[in-house]
Length: 327
Image 1 (cartoon, rainbow, N blue to C red):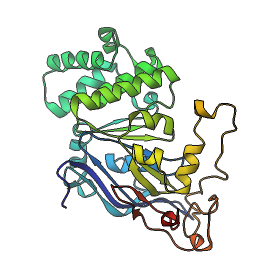
Image 2 (image 1 turned 90 degrees about the vertical axis):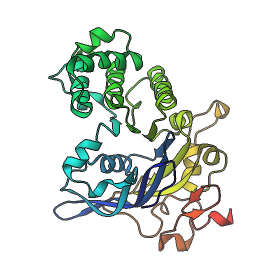
Image 3 (image 1 turned 120 degrees about the vertical axis):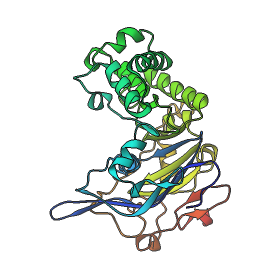
Image 4 (image 1 turned 45 degrees about the vertical axis):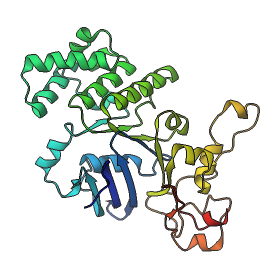
């Protein structure tokens, strides 16, 4: 697989479904996404669009069954992660690819102190001595803005606030200085002040370690603060991909335009925000043709029968809409 000199992650035509007794849910329908070293690439979409399934596939955490990878490739530093053995995946997971989960309480082990969870990761992946691992854990907790690092090192997860648990999880995710960090809705459960603090922390880590970040979110206001590039996912397909400036200043897909119009903004004060009609289709009942056509304000007859390919509009801006060239 040939990749660009700085390309860290390249997902090609990834297709994933979930098999149930009498039905199949098509979660990802041939997505393509690339991320360069040191870049923050945001994957944006409504709930049920396939964002978290994408991250689980990258991490090798997809539950099989019921999950099933029907096709596609995930190249990380030139290696196809989908062809690795479970032993190979464990070596990559944590050491080369870190992950921050949406709800840290579900992923921090309640039976172990924060310090034990960080030091065990360091010992496992970097083979450092326990004393050295403890010293590094203290440094990491300080790095992510936890001032009482010695106390937190000896604390159990339930003894920390939501913001502190999220910072502790970030410390665990970056402890091996992985070249890629996946952040899956890392600010959703936090208040606005804490959200801003976590975003600033991620930006600082990105700048300090030149760490590539795949930032998963449903919130374009949050994405605007952190991303270099944005991919919009809808019903298991990337329907638009562009730099942050291109997407916010010149969106091409009708769905992207509606998402932007629905963002609260000081300039829109006193006016009613536009809501996107309808719902994201159930993964078991995806419409034929362009899956957005039942909600699209500019739908044409052909949109109901054929899936539009992603069209390159220049400078890396792509959109999957038959009417793109007409607008």
